[in-house]
Amino acid sequence: MFQLTRSVTWQALMRLRQDTADDRIRDYFSADPQRFDKMSLRVGGLFLDYSKHLVSEAVLAKLIELADHSALVQRRAQMFSGDIINVTEDRPVLHTALRNMGDAPVMVDGKDVMPEIRRSREQLRQFAEAVRSGAWKGYSGKRIRDVVNIGIGGSDLGPNMACRALLKHRHPELNFHFVSNVDGAHIQKVLARLDPASTLFIVSTKTFSTQETLLNAKTARRWFLDNAGEEADIGAHFVAASTNKKAAMAFGVREENVFEFWAWVGGRYSMWSSIGLPIALAVGFDGFMEMLQGAYEMDQHFLAAPFRENMPVLMALIGIWHINFMGAETQAIVPYDQALHQLPSFLQQLDMESNGKSVDIFGHPVDYKTGPIVWGQTGSNGQHAFFQLLHQGTRFVPIDFIASLEPEPGMEEHHFALLTNMLAQANAFMEGSQRGSRLDPYSCPGNRPSSVLLLDELTPKNLGALIALYEHKVFVQGVVWNINSFDQWGVELGKRIAGEISERIDEHSQDFDASTQGLLALVRERFRGEANTPRPAKTGKPARKSPEKTKR
Ligand code: F6P
Image (cartoon, protein in one colour):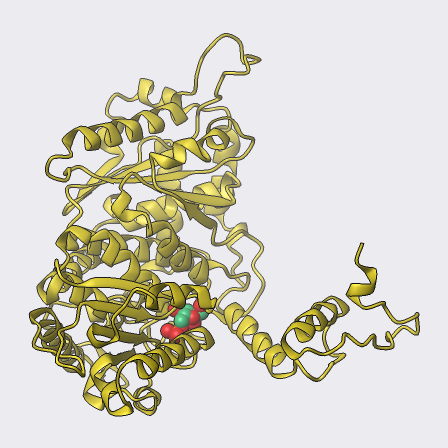
């Protein structure tokens, strides 16, 4: 059986890591004045500078070889053509079909899905125009002023991030709210400020079975009926984006207002589908299509560009160098753009739910690191929060800086400060501070790598390209690691146990560990008012005193 870590290329990269262990990024620039030109790349409205990495030309060439020797060309073709590459769920992976602007068919089970994708887009267009124009009325005849998306994970993070990122393109008279957490405080805070007569709820859930979303939707429904309309009015204030039309209609959504999508769209890859309905309402259907167009153009680049000039491939390979050869455990995402402040959270699910795996596509445990811990916060805030660790800490944390060149009108001075801060930080991470001796407490070791990704402007099109770029970066890493980036069985485990615990709260079940039993006893006492009757411990030891008796 092929073992990645025993491959000739992997072994050569291990040796290259040893050979370059004492290299300094700064010296690469001294040795090659053309380094910036050779290690930067423009694709459409995106410019990537990947020159400030501990990656020599030899390392880069060997990383490209790793991609060449992987199944990347084949798996990429399989993904775009609709082959079943999500092998554990027996599904194709076709978020790329949702933004396909070409005429070529995309076949699923022998049927071209492009006609139904185009019908779905038309349904979105008509609905978005009706709501945005005011033609869509609530039960009392008022137009919609507030849109509440109820969803979690990929049914929240993508549209939420995009609506925030594209704020300046947003309809001036529509307000958007995103409810995701099952913590009642989340929906309570949103509903408190709304007029039910002019509020539209979008119940966004691929399966229409996610506990948090169903409970939030039920609460929203009750709020609406308690404060405004009748059952018959539900249809004017609740629509759904789901693959489960039957469940959506059972909730009270009219059939024509169920915006369907398909099982071959993964949750964290679904913002291009009807899950993107809030985006189409916010920026208009044309803006939504511009976002798809940007993603489509990145798709075409990913399909056509040689690996050495392929932006997603280069980002993926540099990430593999950090993770598998330099020992990076995390990847920092630092957008120097307040409009992108939700991008780190979105990329967290995209990357960690896709590549947080420890078995390969055959189910065999892997003997190498896979997906990193993705985290981050906007700059310049990060400079006053965690940059100290990044500059002087003991950990190796590669950073993606992301910004747009175009300032908000009238905000040129702010934007200039923002961009110069970002460039200064990227330089400082590389150069360090050469004050006095290395024992100088103020000295920063430097040699800490980062990429800088510059958007000409934060437009729907460039945002679409940016998200598709990261989707394909995650895909390429998954292929090199030979894992399935498109299932999420770990999440299903938590969902199952949550169901068991809530259903069996009254059973005093001994099936759970002692810790869970003890904590359940506290929850049971609060929610069932039960005296916390001590139970004979399994081990025959004296029964544990109930918590109140041990209160100190
Ligand atoms: O986190 C697990 C997950 O299934 C995600 O993949 C998905 O985006 C989220 O839960 C919500 O699922 P649904 O859209 O079916 O409610």
